[in-house]
Amino acid sequence: MSDEPILAALVYATGEGATVGLLAETAQARGLRVAGMIQYDDRRPDRRRCDMTLVDLSSGRRIALSEDRGKDTRGCRMSYSALEEAAGMALAALESAELPDLLILSKFGKREIEGHGFRQVVERAVELGVPLLVGVTSDHVDGFRDFGGGYERVFETVAEVEALIADLAAAKAEV
Image (cartoon, rainbow, N blue to C red; front, top):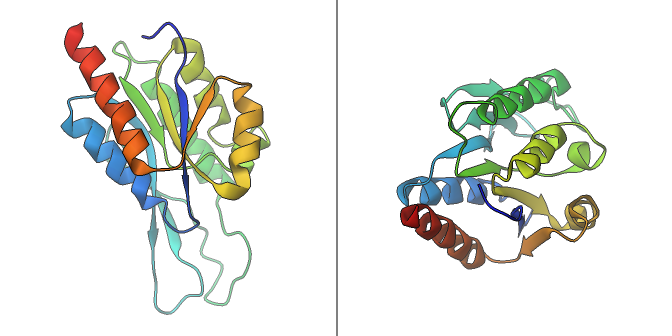
């Protein structure tokens, strides 16, 4: 797709990951073929923690990411098997006959820094030259930078990412 990989991250505050979903909608509205996974947090009044759901941008399929361990659960409730299932779906989008114009993942976090989760998907997108946008919280920026090895771009504002999306849409229109 491009000569140089675009490995971009938007730094967002904890709990504001839905911003990346809005950017996916912006990219689609600009005519870009978008693939990836967006996380949505569903608040439940009877629970301490929200339920996490991943939505596949290609199919709209929803994957429950949280394990229900009861209303007073503390700590991580992530279903690692559901995360790996979602990563497999995102990877399949990169193996299709028509590559996406942009791959978007809500989060590059602890699991990805450790080499799990969507890490393989990110690596494959870079190999294929598919531009990639991930969300990253401030406590994981250094891990993202280490992974990027100097090829990454870290954006602090939505406006910067919107400009990147506009550039990708303009490049697609020229083809």
